[in-house]
Structure formats: structure tokens, C-alpha cells
Figure (cartoon, rainbow, N blue to C red):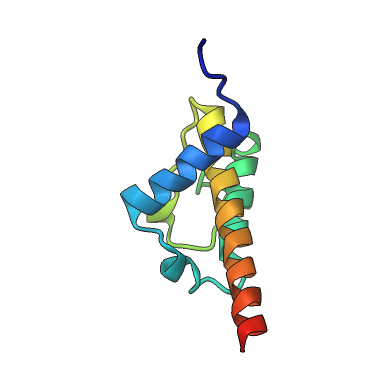
Length: 106
């Protein structure tokens, strides 16, 4: 029987790729305490609405938290963009949960 692939599995695979392929570890993510991970996720989630990228009056340009070189849209693959968004949200949730656990342990 063929394994069903769903959105959660696609997001999990993207998060694993970010960690293993890009090196975006827990320690790396801990540096972003001002909502940068969530902002980046929102940009990928909204990318379908604003194909101008970093040109003109772009909402993405306004909210993208990092240098534009890190903006890597996939305009021909909406699922891929949403997977990036979901993985960044998961990273932000994990970061917050780790911080709360550390504070509890103190």
C-alpha cells in the first residue's frame, strides 16, 4: 500500500531539510527572539498574493526579516512555499517551547 503524504508530512520533511541541509539548528534558531521566524513564515505563506518579490510596493519586502539574498521563493510550486512557511512556524514554536522549558528549569 502506498503511504499517504499529507501537509504535515511535507512540512516535517522541509523542517528536517532546513536542519540537516541548511544547518538551521535549535541553537541557530534561538538567536531569533524578535519574531523573525514567524515573519519569514508569513512571507512565504503570502508569496502567492505578491509575485513582485522585492520589487515595487511589496509586502514581502516590508516584512522579510533577513537580507533579500535569503528570500528563496518557488513561484511554480505553491506547496513548496507553504512547506517552507509551515517549517518556519514549527521552528518558532519549538524555539518558544525550549525557552519556556529553560525558564522553568531555572
